[in-house]
Image 1 (tube, rainbow over the protein chains, first blue to last red):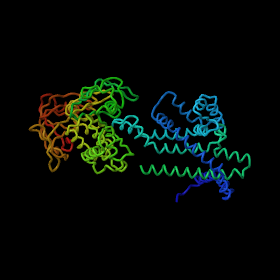
Image 2: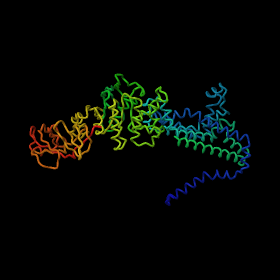
Image 3: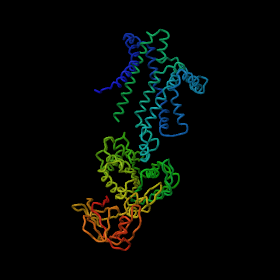
Image 4: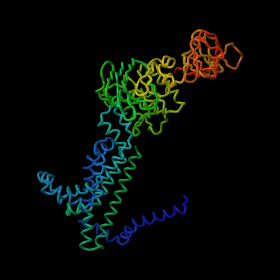
Length: 261
Length: 351
């Protein structure tokens, strides 16, 4: 058993307060919700569809945007270029701006009158009020998590290994896919999970771009506004349980994969 | 075979200026210099990982400056081995074979044969994290040799392994060279250089300041840096005969020098610092096992005193004080006795 000095005990007390601050509201909500309420709420098609929509749109946004985010992270880790610090700042921008403001910005970007909106309309895709719009809003606020984690992962891969692969006859593309990507994979998976989780929990930007179809954070907000706390609580508990289970499952799977390598 | 012509490169921290040298087929060529002299960068330029600012690299009479690394037919072994940690030993060795249009079984055979040759045939399924430094070095060598490179480039190959394994790897490198492999080896260790090299180039302040056989470079340093770098003026190739108490080094037909160092029999180099030799006008009985009479060839000033060169069958440099030169009347042509202890000699067998 580790011993703590009286000074460290003060830190321990502060840490315990912090944990309580996070856990108390969540546990309060869980204990205030009866299991019969949870079952009834799960039986509602609107709730199930909303949770499913939230999960798959966030997953799709993570998947699609990763095709640009991962190669870009590699460049950020490996190359020096003019205004690199500015570019790094731009990547972090979605984390610091208010998400409702981000929603307004995205709405202007994807509305029917914008270039992207017109291009979408030409192929029968309307971003506003569509899962595609939700995906754009989710990706906008969550992409920094993937880019930063992947960049750190690539940065940790020794340059010598890439040089060795080049001398052993690999093309730069093969070096990327057989050396850099597998060695940075742990960080990348961590970034993908974070991006997915962050996208799934987004409310501010999504509600402005697409109130309908309703993702779960919007549904919770609507039930709270229309019927009060008692009706919003079971949906919240269900969503938290599903999100947590998924998060733990993904983390466990990625750890198993890393162990087996 | 391999030729570098006027290679120059400026980098923060160091620069290379007009580097030119030629390596013949089957030769073991060592680039020797202090750390940070840009030697590793030279290898990276030959391998195509870095481009020189100017100059030309020629392999088999074809310029390769603009060729991609995989087109160059050279193999580079990095100082820290750079073994891919996520691949098995077999996966590491097989990595270089992906471009070759061989069947899976042919590739496996090739991997096994090169691994057996480098004595790691039993390690093919192991993960690199379970290997020792010496084993990792062998994997790095096997992975490079499987490409059948025209020139094998070695960047400080013995720096990251412990002393016990160094002799094994040296012996392996020597054997590869005997089998015809052309090797360019970079090191800061002069023991390593002279035990392996056919020819040595000394790199100092971004330039090659001397090239020659180990004997030429060490016995006739053409600059203060080389002399200081090698630290020793008395450097001879000899035939070594092991004895019960050490060995006897034969220089020519008549000169037999006794050493307490056990080195095995065969060829080798013997070195002794000029400060470890003493001069007397008459012979006298002492504990020194090596006592030779010779004629003074030259007396000149040196940084650490007076350098008296005496021919005892080979010219030896003896460093003495000005007072000794005066008191003993050491002048050119005078016959004197040279004494040194058997334990003062350093023997480096040629592996």
